[in-house]
Length: 113
Image 1 (tube, helix red, strand yellow):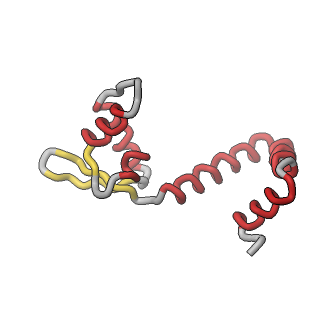
Image 2 (cartoon, helix red, strand yellow):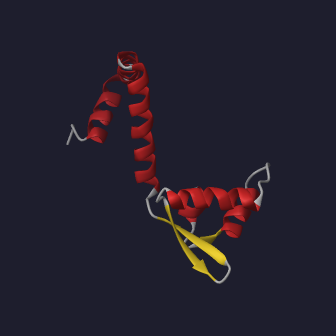
Image 3 (cartoon, rainbow, N blue to C red):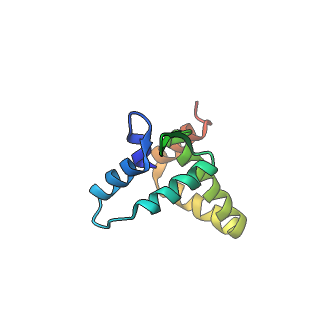
């Protein structure tokens, strides 16, 4: 997704493959990226447009919104599975950061505005 978010315009599978493989030691196949982008399209994360024989992709969701949704999903899963134990761990994590961290978290959650 980073390669799609960073692009100024729509990107092809080949462009994403090149971008990622050029910045990585591990080379991945074109078909790997084709599968990933197709799955992201089915989930509504990217938009796909066919041009000639190529599929072009652009993000449907901002990086910030995507990360917020993923974080919410992960936290919900942790609390769902571990209940009060997970909540206690979150509380310990926050209280260990000191008053500045608590204030920052209040602002991020909308309580401090």
